[in-house]
Image 1 (spheres, one colour):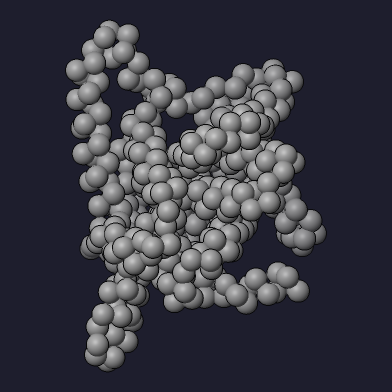
Image 2 (cartoon, one colour):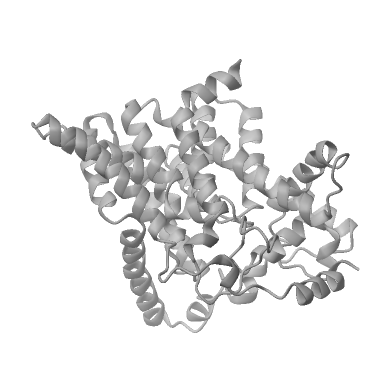
Length: 417
């Protein structure tokens, strides 16, 4: 009954997710990456074709976890999705395999798709549980559209990758933090922190967690923060023990590319002028990435803050400021100037923008314009986010370049045998 009730309450958001999923699964028809060789699980049917170069190793890691790490440890520091996809694939096999024998890759593929649907649906439920306390139903619906029909959602809901955790992790963490804050106890803090640790082993998206720690330290919750930080390392510690048992070493792959360490030589060489130049350059780039990701919605979010300004105290402004700064800092230290890396802020910008949109809409006195403007905005959001993946002239999926299946099979055999 509880699940049925939640589905009914969130049906509009679930429809948005379903449409995004169907488009993502059939994205080959949009010619999303001209000239780029795609991984085509089924060459006869252009469904779930993958245009991200990392998708191959993602699905292999899920299918052959953990023995693949003896030959390729590319995803050894991100086990959460591979483990979950592997387990879900094996569970689905209990139903499917008596009828059709699935290969390890097929089981992992099914597991990955189930995982994506579950994680998107869960984040929708949790987001709306947060927003129901602050937004009206129509503002929540617009927020759902902006988040779950965004470019990053459409591009990743059917992709074998972890990119959507950029905005899903902040949703989950903020929901759990609010629940913990409402009725704090030691055990809840431990559970909250362990969940964060598991999420960080999916994608080390630390901006939201560190922001909350700083917020709590500012509010003199020193003991609680120490407990949380230690507990959030439990999953990492247990996973490292597991790898040691397998005679494997945990390696943070990003360090190979200088992520989180590239700026250290500036400090060691006392080149503070050069470091300051890098910081200012990065801040300018961050502003550009924000505009590239959110365009006029970030302006509407300012109107949203103005609309609810009397309900906000200093703590809200402090947290939002810290979250923005740490989202920038996360981009800075990772040395990845990618638009999607500003998506952490979706949970802040889009709900505020929805409030700002309806605040300005209510200023319009002509009901005909007001009503049709809503439909126009919904149409605009849907169309522009789909068109972000369209490249003309359209090329039939069968005419698009594909990865060499013979070479892929040979590589797979080398990795798993």
